[in-house]
Length: 394
Picture 1 (spheres, helix red, strand yellow):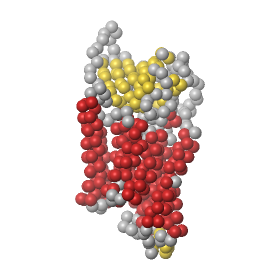
Picture 2 (picture 1 turned 45 degrees about the vertical axis):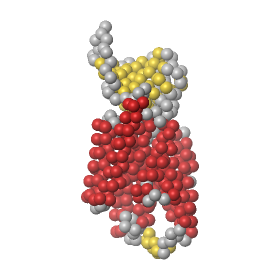
Picture 3 (picture 1 turned 180 degrees about the vertical axis):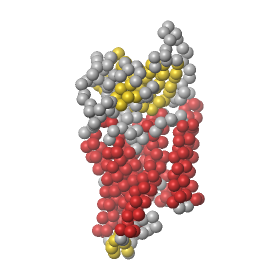
Picture 4 (picture 1 turned 30 degrees about the vertical axis):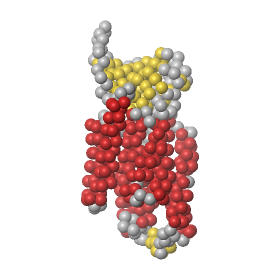
């Protein structure tokens, strides 16, 4: 089916975003280029609620291959699950989008006006793609991704143990991690943008970050309140502002970077991996297991710690699975870590003065029970925020 553009009359309060050459809302799985044309196969990366009205500077075709697609093009059904070809002349304002990211696949043909009429071209091999029919190529590609993860994981967990945690050294460690991530993704895996890793920034992305922060901080605050009610510790007083404010500033800054590192390494990298190899149905269990095992670097290999990490990892992974972005997961991680530092600081001395701190299995079980409350809370927040999507630029 071929559909032509049609204005759906949606009002905007400012000019829509203009996309440049061969720029689409998806992760490139393969690309071909010929004079005047760019052909690409992509998977969608931006969730429906985050798509705003936009336009493209050049004419292009979009061919739906798989997934549920919503289009305002003239002659197109409101929602389709069958192959659909949409042609958009330059400057067409639209908000075509996938209903759900999972399983989505589409082709684009961008025309830059330099093509020669009556001429054909042999398509070169794709610049990057998913090995499909050849099992050995697919195995080699997956092995390359696993090697990249091993490099990032060993760096993130071993280097701090070797160089210490002095602030200048730690900041250098953070900078090198992001450089290493860029090198692994760009030159090892062919990822040249941040969107495949879950770092798309549509309008309203900060809402997900701060909603996650509130959930993480709130759950950790509830957990400490339960501990206090159970007699795990006694509150002897509070430290003064001269101590508390620098600690909170350090916690807000440092824990954001630490949370982002962990989420990018596990859930962001895992998101790009599962999309590339068509494994999104396994994304949640895969990242939960990887997160639980990875946390053993910090907490030791213990069944109780593994269970706690799995409970937390389930909520974190679910936010990414449902939104297609890392922001809410980073926020949860960030908020929980800030609350932890508020209570314990970086050296065991937090803002509240605690004394007679007890340990015991019952406190661990109580902590896991409170952590288990995070998942239904996350589900409710996701449902509420998705029920009020922002559909136009404001």
